[in-house]
Length: 314
Image 1 (cartoon, rainbow, N blue to C red):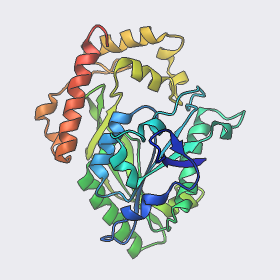
Image 2: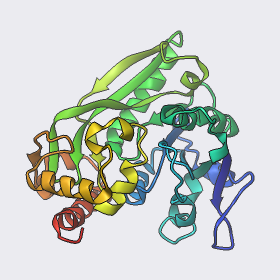
Image 3: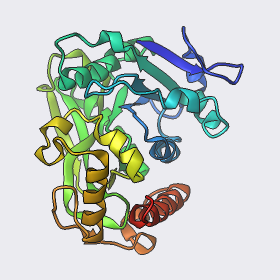
């Protein structure tokens, strides 16, 4: 495992103890640090939206990537070169970039074991950052976007609950509304694999059995799943731990999968054929709680994706 930020020469990344700027990001108006851990593949647009929504809340963003996908395929590092561009320069003061060496994957490890290794790295990085058991982790994928206001409230609830009773470990979780491909296509049922905030002490116990849910909030944001142009989406799909378990994808070429996705999209259906609800992002009240810049970015992204995905050369 290696921690990195962009080197001063404007090219590549530098290894070693590149955790330096984190002290400037520690907020003084709350009694805990809030750390956001997640892995990334090629979701750079969503990463920037993620940074913008939580910038004022999160002390440090720990973003993990590897040159080996969960499904054991070689891939380039997407974030490493991006960090040396003007686009991501504003985010470096709060960012710790972790590269998991592909050699850490055991010869008999399956996709799920390698995915678990990414999550286990949270403990090691948390120790490097000097986290205390009562510091808090914001957990979820980069495309799971609970409202910043909900995260702020949830973090305070967890902290206060922990201060009142530390015999069990409190967690606040948020259900999200799932959208497929863009914000034009909503899944009617809420996403129940919640984003969470909980104490860092959870990473130190053998299981999550000591956790107690102190608040669960439905429809507290958006799960922006598969928000890609088709070619980038194929890269993402074939990286999934569970791709080989999807019988509909077995043995199909990228072209065949893209054609299926485009046909389903035209019929307002998801990957497996489930019906979706058509939504107009510009007038969707569910997006209003986001910060104005994030609200605008999400709508602009979806407009561009929707046009590209339906086009003949998408």
